[in-house]
Length: 488
Image (cartoon, rainbow, N blue to C red):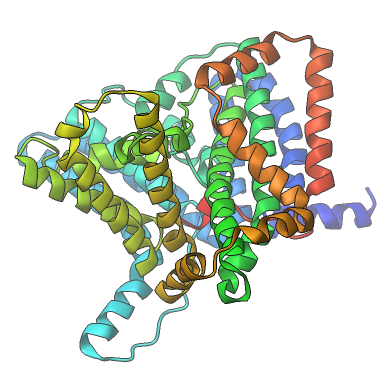
């Protein structure tokens, strides 16, 4: 073979890529090749299939992280071996091994993600000037670390009793669709499916194709297009009017939902193509009528993880009202800190914690209000505005920047900007309106549309897929926006 052909291949397989993700063209091409051999192995050699996917997942991690990907197999080996020891231990040693495994699972995350944040806090408290370390955060470490913790704790508590082999656990913790931005998947969901060899169901394949198409439209088309204007606003809020700032906040509110739910759809869709069923991660969260409901619909994998492994161990709602409020607040504070080592994420978590406490404290008399449509509208508006304002602190790089955005909206707002804004940014405005309108449909309607696609002729499926890909290509930016949650 010509050396000129071999060199690009060598470059591709040996060089990490900061833009590597499941929405990148190189991944899509490689996945087609990978999937061809996967189908063959899935039918004939079950163990070989598990090993094949694990090796591919480690390569996926290498492309995203370079040599830092070695943390992943190290976590796999350490977590599996210690959990196996814990499973066979008795009494106090069993509990000690559980805590040892959890701490070791979290130590790399704490070091890579929070070392500089702790240095900053120490400098502020002691008026020191220790320089921050040059630390690169491995992509996906927050997700696979929490997944490893959930496995160990579930085995310890007897919630997951099936014994996973090293190969099965390696597949579970390294599974490439989940590496970059989750969703966090429990052992009880994935590992039992790895223990049985079965042909890939046609319905599951079409479901996966549907989810991938929807995810591409959400992330690669609408979210990335909205991000262009949103970035301008948050980079320089004083350069724009209050109306333009408000549109940027609305745009980011939709962008972050479409970005993350789009990635989740594609992750779950790829798994479905491979015959694996994962749980949904978003359930139309902006339709929520209160903050408690919002967190049952938004990033379900993460919110249930914090509920099961932080909120309930703290005491949940079993130790009186005040303790319940405190537990809710602490859980949301830690959730904010999980998103990033920044005071902005702490503030965002604190806002949501305070909002949950206020809702819980007033739930008694709120439940007695008649459930009429005007009441539902008021509840929806209050919840949506609260979530949208909190997103300002999530997106802004500083408290001053967030306050500036809010100040611009409060002091320099005029509806007179609407006609020229729409004329100047017509396509952006259309994407924003369509995004919120489609988010407003009922789940039953979305399920009906999915069922129609699954039952439609293959030619219809092909035409729709081509249309989606053409739309993504036509509106694709030169600099594709990275997945927002990949940085967490």
